[in-house]
Length: 138
Image 1 (cartoon, helix red, strand yellow):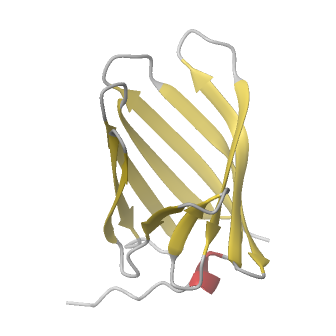
Image 2 (cartoon, rainbow, N blue to C red):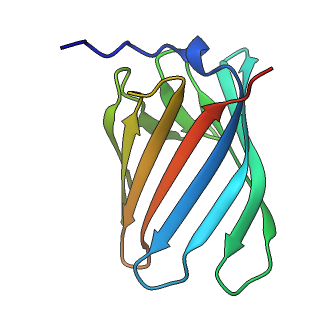
């Protein structure tokens, strides 16, 4: 059996197409389509995504988010708070944001395409989000 390759920070640098499907336990489904940019900075890679979010029954709206990815694949929120550790071979990461629990599953088996499955549960949150990244050619 082939052992999965270890991902390193530089593997992510560049522009990626992304698509996300969001399923809420008690709410409308949503879709996000856009681009993700991992840009070299002094502290690692700046992750910036921007695109269009579409919720069932609502007009499309612009959406974006930002993180900082460090050399050791630790991910931080834009304000510097720790978020989670990306497993270098893919797998599960966790984040507790009182009172919500985040479980993230990274799948690098189709590299340079990869996916991340989020499961978020808490008193006011109960959703799953599946994101697929495809490297932009060019």
